[in-house]
Every structure is written in C-alpha cells, then in structure tokens.
Length: 81
Ligand SMILES: [Zn+2]
Image 1 (tube, rainbow, N blue to C red):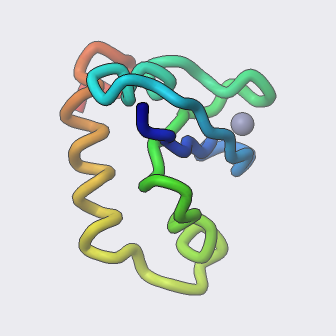
Image 2 (image 1 turned 30 degrees about the vertical axis):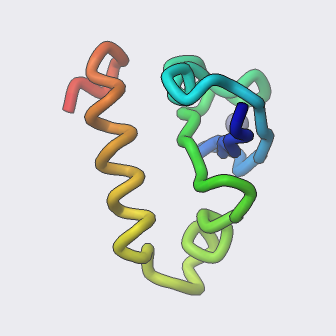
C-alpha cells in the first residue's frame, strides 16, 4: 500500500500513514491531535507544503491541484466549499 503524508495547516506538524488509495483522504476528515487544525494531504514523502507555508515560494500548480482535490473530496466536513 502507498504511503501518504499529511500536514496540519494550524501548527505545521507532518505525519504519514500507510493506507489503501481509496482511504487516503481519511486523515483529512479528522483534525490535528495537537491543535485541532485542519489536516491536508501531501504528495508522497515530498514536503511540498513547507516552503509555501513559510512564504518562500508560491504554491505550484501541482500543489494547487492537490488542494482542489482535497477540498472536493471533503464535502462532508465543515468547510462546505
Ligand atoms: Zn496542528
């Protein structure tokens, strides 16, 4: 099974999990255990969110696509976008 990386938008904590592909967004429907922040899925083991979070880089097209996909697959959460 593939390994997915997740990141908290609130405190920036990164963790990973090995899940079947169809369950890869499951951790995104939960909140950060540390701060209660929103969890976003990363791409494999690439910590693409870090430079973006620090304001050093603009999000890449691929990163935005992931965010779009995450938002689309999380209609059931409180974002309601
Ligand atoms: Zn957090």
